[in-house]
Length: 80
Image (tube, rainbow, N blue to C red; front, side, top):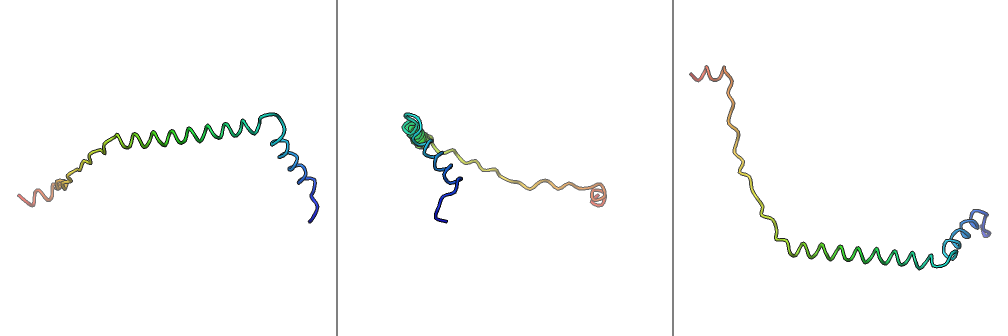
């Protein structure tokens, strides 16, 4: 339990290579992350502006009238 197995060491080495292997990987990742946040904030601000400028749409109501009753031939003959 106290020692690390070979799988643990492989994971640790892979993470270390990902973080520290190669120049500027972390800074480029953080730069991409920051650009994403800026784009998200800009999109949210644009949505708020369009919501403030656009007047609410008029709500139209539909007057529902009951359908006319369809009579069968037998009922029309009884009525006459």
